[in-house]
Length: 149
Image (cartoon, rainbow, N blue to C red; front, side, top):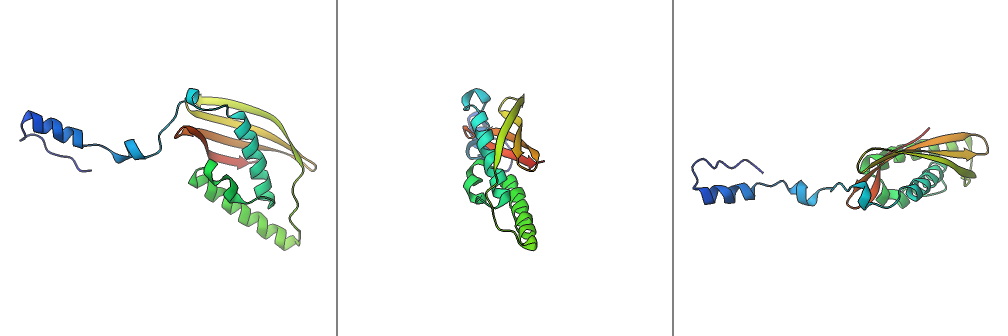
């Protein structure tokens, strides 16, 4: 909304004009939520990790976690899915549900409403780490970054 000049207005009109200046994002955009108003992030971290590993392996659809990730994370994972699908097709492999176990989860809170975690995933062939950043938005956790290392 553009600035409203209030120099020439009476005091009551100037106050009314000041009230009219608002940013719609303050009311309708994503609202940050403090950690104390959010549930324990550990179960979400483990479930997201499990889902992401299965999505990259082709055993689960990416749309299943769309509500728990930001648009940037969704696009990043979509690129990974496309690349892993092409690689499987080039090698002539079929989709197989991966067998793995969730190991330790390290959680750190760099600021209120933000959780950064690494989750260890132990598979038959190798062990991987999944780095996840959760942000409290609109009274729920949303993953704003996910990286499978």
